[in-house]
Amino acid sequence: MKKAICVLLAAVCCCMMSSPFVAYAQTSDVLSFEEAVALDAERTRLFQEMNEAVYRNDAEEAERLEGELAEIGMKEISRSEAQDLLEESNSGIELLEKEYEDDKYKYFEGDVDMWYNGVEYSYTVMDIAPKLMSCSLVKSGDVDEFMPDYGYVAGKLVFELTADIVSMLAKPVPQLEKALSLAELLVNLGINVADFFIDENSTDRVTASYDWFIAETVSLVFSKAGTNTKRTIGFFNSISGEVSGYVNILDYSGHWTEAHRERFAERVDWRAPNFGNGANALKYYIDTGTRYEVKVDSIDIKSLTNEGTILHTIELQNPLSLNEIY
Image (cartoon, rainbow, N blue to C red; front, side, top):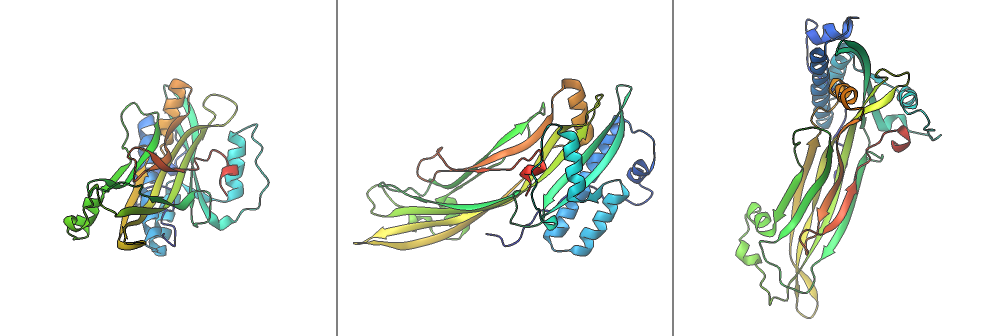
């Protein structure tokens, strides 16, 4: 299990003051759809670079990138400011009165004015990412499984993971799938597979233990979109973390003893296409009247002993209000 969280947050690229993206952020002109798409994409790229700097514990680089975010109109805001924005865009939802630690999350917000089909629209992008492990956007846990009374073949999977992905995109989005057989695990470790092959008449048994650490970063898009009420018109998430564990081969000679114990670890990383791109979210909402969503809803860890059966489901937070961010 990791001791510290790897993900941080919000958006964009390393541009000089002469960059057109800085000009976009500093002018009162309304952007074209293409310009808005480019600006949002630039913010997202900087966001990823800042995340990586935080993961490396490079505070100086993260601060520099945060400054570049501010130059192109993506500024850090407080939780109370984030709550004000969400209250405004979720009319009818009464936010819970809770005490929150301000240092659990970082919130970034950026506004854009854009022309679309000859009409001027405005939208706001808010990115939220965790800084601490003990928060609702970080999921961790563990689960064990024991092999029933039949032999174990080296080709069987010791680890399988799939994700439930929701997407409003017309084209396919990248999937999140991981699988590892006992044979592959042993080969990766430089161990002779034949030494571990268990036939149907073997008295050996296999157990597996899994643990996970998944951090979620979210991006929400708000707009009045021709109405008098600001509403949530877009939602994206990205995840980063690891699922790891042990495979234990037990031998029975009057009592169970541990014959072999091998560790496995798999990175779990996925980011929604168009993450943080408010221009695309606004276009979709105007064209369809529907919120634009591209996200991972949940991650399934599949059974070791019964392939295809779900052993455990990791439910991601997918928050649409600050009630769900604590």
